Length: 71
Image (cartoon, helix red, strand yellow):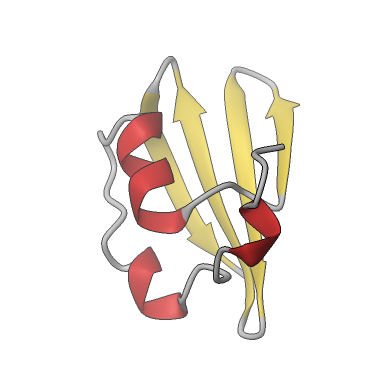
């Protein structure tokens, strides 16, 4: 947890459109901020973001975005 992170705004839905396959985790952090939840799923590291418009998942393989989904 980063001190002061609670003061950061929740990732806005329009920011999710900026995330693309192949980006690094640092690029995603810069766009979306810290994820709501991180979990390991098979060969992927999955970052989940919860917004008023649903759940957004970014799956990393290595340090690169391999898959993006919205629920």
